[in-house]
Amino acid sequence: MRPLVATIDLTAIRDNYALAKRCAPGRQAFAVVKANAYGHGVREVVTALHDEADGFAVASLEEAAAVRALHAEARILLLEGCFEAAEYPLAAQMKLDVVVQGEQQAQQLVSAALAQPLNVWLKFDSGMHRLGFEAPALRDWHARLAGAQQVAELNLISHFACADEQGHSLTEAQLEGFLDLLDLDFDQRTLANSAAILMIPAAHMDWVRPGIMLYGASPFADRSAADLGLKPVMRLNAALIAIRDVAAGESVGYGATWVAERDARIGTVSCGYADGYPRHAPSGTPVVINGQRVPLVGRVSMDMLAVDLTNLPDARVGDAVELWGEQLPVDEVAQAAGTIGYELLTQVTARVPRRYYNG
Figure: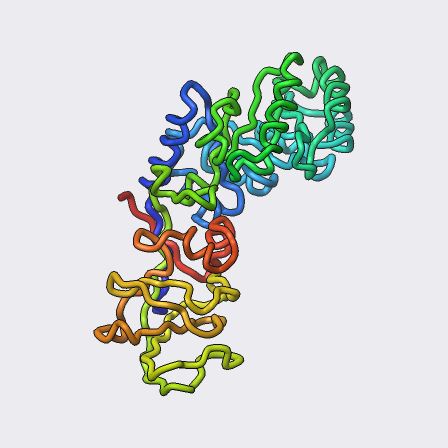
């Protein structure tokens, strides 16, 4: 068996969800499990949170169906709403909470024949400029939906653009715009993502929406997950499958982009971009072998990458390699690769086995 596995600590996910709840006392929390629970496995994550989570949030009807099959009673929030009119009856059948983020969705909702009314979340574009109504249109649709037969609860939702950048002026403007709508009679309100849960108590409202923090990564570039009290969830582990000596002046990998400045000892690791490791990770990106950090060298290949073992003379073929996890935070690898932890976690591909345990 190829030595590569993503090991996932389900207790850590429960602990991180509990931290979100402690940060927002008295509020309910949708655990965001879209994109296969950020690459961790939606079946296992929903099962782990079955008795803890107040609800779950997903991006599509297909994702909602997968969660509903695992939890018959939980509130499930469809974050982008229904993509076509025919989805509304299905959403009602599955008892979903549905975001309505634009004119077309709103028109389709009021035209739908539903077996039972839906909990509707009107999306306010508070400054992200991605989805949602501007304030005047939202007020108009609030009035039109308040008594509609298709609507059970009428709720308000928005999303921060820069909550991960502390002190950003847009965050305050978005919060003020959201608060300006609270004269309207909404049943429930939600605004806070992971960053706002951790740092902006004024944004907590009735529901919060922990996403990346559930999976043990930080939403902030300048604050580590450990500093925030989050526990790492996924360990991506491979192994050394070959070791060779490379003379000074010799190159390693495709394109000969890395050239040894001294005689070097190079290890080959059983992970590549087809497994989800970032191809654009530069030489110098750390991995951990025998408790010591060593640098990646050369280009990441489809199935392998190379590391410089010159300063780790005791390394042997078969030694374990941590690509990220408890010894090496995923956010640090992401920063080295010029991306974010979200991308690395969600891009771990299906050919990487997931193994689950309760830490």
